[in-house]
Image (tube, rainbow, N blue to C red):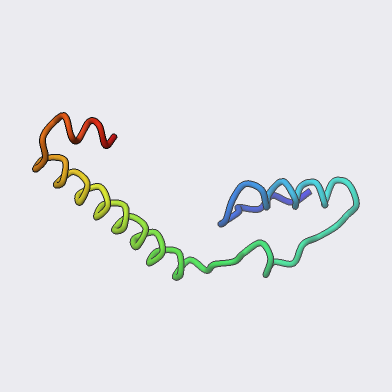
Length: 74
């Protein structure tokens, strides 16, 4: 049984472990390794940027509105 670090979700690891343990099935590396390290950094930074902008926009709106209105929207 080989251990792999999944770059997508833990589901891939379960499939690999089940395949190796049960039937000797080996998934190709192209299925498991969808992204290279150089591709993950911009994706992660882009996700953080989108999350930060979304949080700042909603926080700015809530700070400028009345408390009752902001709580009702929540």
